[in-house]
Amino acid sequence: AGAWVTVVSLVTGMLWGKPMWGTYWVWDPRLTAQLILLFLYLGYMGLRSGIDDTGRADKSSAVLAIVGLVNVPIIKFSVEWWNSIHQAPSVMKMGRPSMPADMLVPLLTMMLGFTLYFVSVLLVRLRAEILRRERTANWVREAVVS
Image (cartoon, rainbow, N blue to C red; front, side):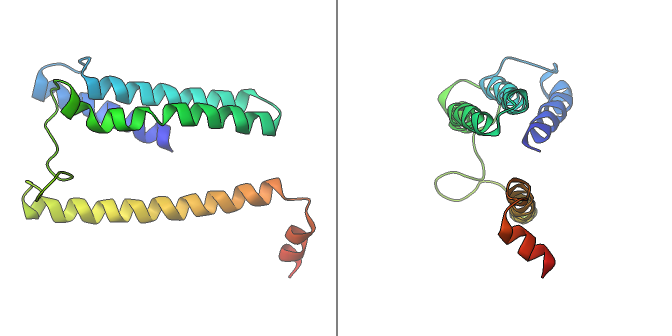
């Protein structure tokens, strides 16, 4: 899901960038870091599916995920650290947000909705993964029978 969200953000950003900046792509710090994030997602999925031993796949992909975590603050703060075509923060900043309330309220509502959706999907996937891994355990058979 994260890789698809990254692809969608890059594609829609490129479509929005053409009329705003006159080009689909520039090697802006935020765009470049976002592209690196996509490559990290694809590498993670490739590494995970490329190793047959589940334990080794878990450990290897966890190391890549931890290394990739370094990219998250780079994406977040890139517009503040380097000269960027993106605007400075207008919602998550010190002091009051500079965004008008008629735009801020729907944005925060959608952020809350997406967060709740993410948590619910995460819990469902976590439950499915636990049941898949523990399918031969007695407690799973007892839970299914009762």
